[in-house]
Length: 61
Image 1: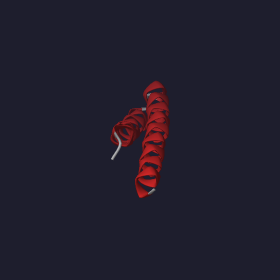
Image 2: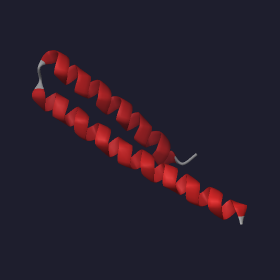
Image 3: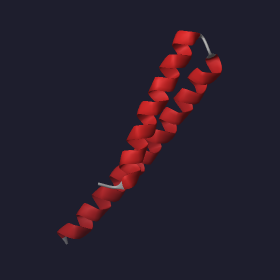
């Protein structure tokens, strides 16, 4: 499993927690930062998944 996949998933979780905390406290800035961090995490996780798929495809040849 690629490190980007793991780190991206962690960022997604952290961003979701931050977003929820911002919503609960009424802090719009924290909410926005959480959404952004969640999006960055999703992209990083998808990159890791693509690397894994490419590695698996090469290993099958």
